[in-house]
Structure formats: structure tokens, C-alpha cells
Amino acid sequence: MKETEKKILLAATKLFSENGYANTSTKKIADAAGVNELTIFRQFKSKSNLLQAVIHHHAFEGYIVDKIAHLITNDVKKDIEIFTHTYYLFLKNNIKMYLIQVRETDDTSKRFTNTIDYTAFMKKYFQQKKEEGTFVGDPNLISTSIVSMVMGIFTLKVYAPEIYHDTDYHDLMNIFIENLIKLYTK
Image: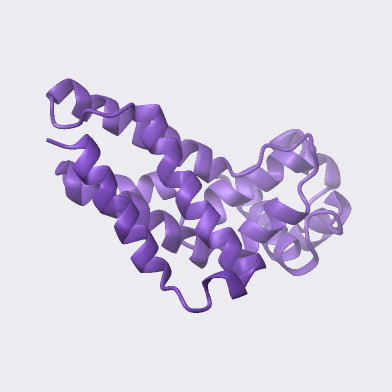
């Protein structure tokens, strides 16, 4: 990554998390990065693309697909647990970026880039396991279900914590995982 790009990404990360996406102009980002505003548009084409680059490169734990690729064991049962719990922790550890995407990203922006890529990674993994004969489910359905369940629990914990005030989210996820394993693994 070029030094100019790194400066822009660091400035944008700081300003987006402090002021929100809508309240952060490209001019403010350029000033904070010590570059001309046109440089941002040459590098990223739009403010929306810049936000996606921030999410992709500067999430607290980095790019989730890179992280998960190192954790996979190739044991489908264990990997379903890893997929589920790793995604929840990723959302929790990147709550600022999550909130920016939920609240403030405009309609022309691509939201949840890491989640989209994560779902595609899982789909490819489950497709491979299906071809090997260790998984019998629909790779797209299971990948989407894992992401939807985890994001649903996380979103409700953030925006409506009273729903889970007496329920441990780990218990909910573990029941889901157990059922996936029973239904779709050999």
C-alpha cells in the first residue's frame, strides 16, 4: 500500500468513527491526511469507495476473510463453530464501523463489504465440502443463514438489548450450530 493511500485511510478511519460518515467531508479527510482533496478521488473515485476501503483495510481485526482462512481446520463441524463465533467477535470488535454502515452509509454505497466477502468465502468452503461428501446442505443457504443469525443477534444486542437481557447469546448460537451440524454434516 502506498504511503499516500495509507495516510488517507487512517485519516478517514479516524474521522468516520468520530464524526460519522455523513458528517465527514472528503475535504476534512484530505486536510487530516495532508493531501489534496483530488488525490482522494484519484485513489478511491468516491467517498463511498473510500469507506469500503476503510472497512476492508482498517477494521479492528483486519479483513475477516484473511483472518478466517487461518482458523479453518477442514473439519466441517469445528469450522461451522469457527465461522459463527468468529463472525460475532468480528462484529463486536468492529462496532464503530458496523454502526457507521447501519446508520449513515448512503443508498449508493455498498454496505457490509466484509460480510459479503465472508459469506462468499463460506459458500465456497461449503461447496468444496459438499463435493468431498462431508456436507450435504445448500452452501449458499447455510452461509447466508450463519451470517443472518449472527448479525441478527448482534444487531438486537446493540439496538434492543432488553430482548436478550436474560439470554446468553452464546447459548443461542450454540443451539443453532448444533442443529446445523446434525442436519448438514456426515
